[in-house]
Image (cartoon, rainbow, N blue to C red; front, side, top):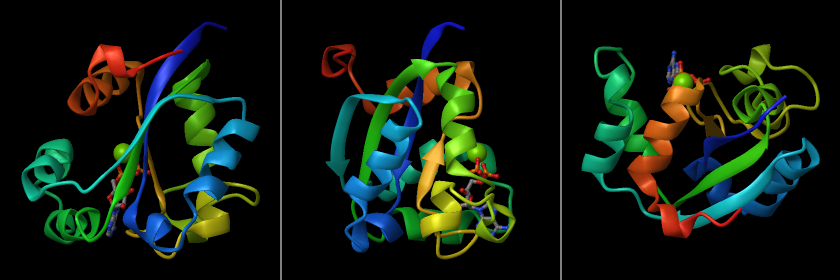
Length: 140
Ligand code: ADP
Ligand code: MG
């Protein structure tokens, strides 16, 4: 299995509860390496651009409001089959459906405030990494 990269966000519900380290430990324990990380306050324009694929969905406005409600930690994660590995440790979008031992089962507050974002394909991982990071900020 090839070593690949994925993009992660520790969302405002998690940073607000001081869970940056706890979430990152679960990512690392799942075999992912943090090769870039920064804490940022997303602008409305950034959040709308990042989630543009969801702009027709009924929760889009609330999702953008939530994502700019506090700081987030954007990360590049590296590991074998990183996209799937990260999705597996994240758990289902709705924490009520997430498996035991996943980040969302452990920490998420709701289907919206679900603690983490993770890319859903290698193609989107590259787009999302490029959205937030310059190549020289990523040190593997
Ligand atoms: P995932 O983050 O698991 O890839 P989606 O890409 O479908 O899930 O949705 C993006 C984000 O939008 C979710 O992580 C969550 O924060 C929010 N979201 C998804 N579905 C809903 C919903 N039904 N109501 C409110 N927020 C939602
Ligand atoms: Mg998604």
